[in-house]
Amino acid sequence: MEKKVKKDLVIITGVTGAIGSALLEQYGQRKNTVIVGITRKSQTWKNFINKKTGKIYCGTLLCAVEFEEKEVKNFIAHIDVEEFARVTFIHCVGDYQFEVDSVGNFTTENDKDGDGINDLVKFLSYDLFKWFAGNLMRKTKSQLDFVIFGSLADKYEPKSFKSWWQTMKKTEHFMSSVMTKKIGFFRFDISSVFCPHELITRPFVFTHTDADQTSWLSPSKLASEVIRALDTSNGGFHKNDMFEHWEGFSSDYYQDEKIVPRRLLEIGQL
Image (cartoon, rainbow, N blue to C red; front, side):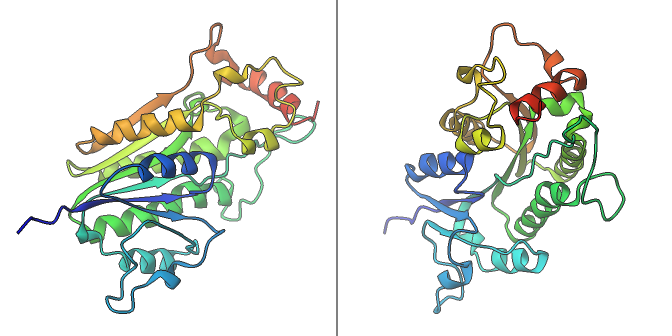
């Protein structure tokens, strides 16, 4: 009797966004790969529980998961992760806030705990990521890989994105502290991605500045590079920069005296 081949499981948050959609499309072309995409636009995951097994159906699906700690734990508990040879969690949710007001003052809002970090930024990219990762690590002995996306600007620590890079520091510390030979963590620091969301949040990026759209990452190319890196994963912590080479580009762009007036132009505040 032919031995049944174990499939791979890929869980993607923010699956209907530009990056999540590109990952969904490319993973969807693979044999023996099951995708569970998480999006608020779909039905709750509880509607996909198999009444006979009490588990979520082992087929590609999009579902909604409330972003609460107990709900995430309950969701992961209903996935039969031991059925899969490998489990990959890709976190495409975050809030990249530009913390400068219309006259150029640096400001941090929504900081109820007083740690100097916007609570929503920290929640989406640190707390939520930890909930998913922690529950998956406790439940499976299979190969595990986790992915999160940062910004190329993070290493320069611009004051205008203080909540973001401080949060990414916390997330990276968590990732590097729990990685093993069977648990891989990937942080991809990326440049601007050419997608509708970027153009909505920065409506004047091409009309008020000299931005070259050909230097922006395409979601499909980014997805390909992420999957390629994951295919060679053997655990551990990995940090990669992802960008299109642009002649004349300088890291000076990420210094506050450069990025603040530029971004104000991009969003129409200058």
